Image 1 (cartoon, rainbow, N blue to C red):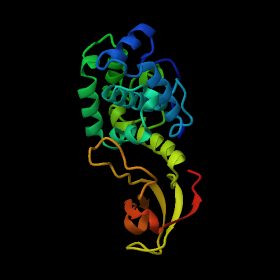
Image 2: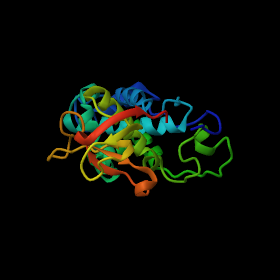
Image 3: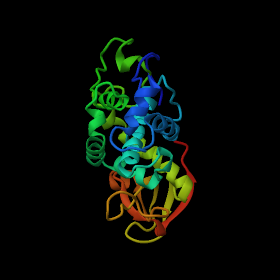
Image 4: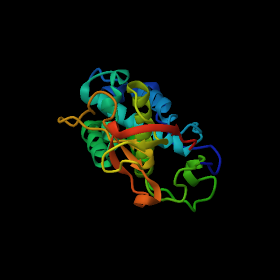
Length: 247
């Protein structure tokens, strides 16, 4: 996906070390710092936005969403950012309502402080965009490839990309079928069909804070025109990987 425009803008959530350190302690003493969340969020974001740099709206948006989720979970559980399990991080990224509720509840004090870098990042993720703005101002002067014609806030456009990045890291850690893998179904309702993995069907635990341990027990499979390109849930036990798609 090729980006548009040129670099120059975007939020500056790491502008000063002191405010970042204060933000990390605003709601829960001892929670991991915002700057740590940005670093790890950026590393994870490159798993789904490999072309991304600090000059890319796609990467800045995806990094921002992951970082805010990381920071919120770390503050909620009073742990360092590096101690947040991927299985907990992915939960708010599976559903926008859950994500917004987590952030606005746990980080309420930080979001209420206009000088706080977390508040600045959240405002950037929630702002609408004008695709017809002059090139130097469009997308904050950043390049953009994802949904470049949309006015929607980054949190609406890139939550899926943020979830996909964390999912890929989880599959690398736990094992499983990656997005784009071509599979043959060996049994069940769709036995004999061939399709492509669109994502894992993660099962969230009863408390609603983490997905269950181990590889996914089912995947969302797209069988193409045969089923109207609508992904359907297929148990992992019926899936045989054929090849990984180039896309």
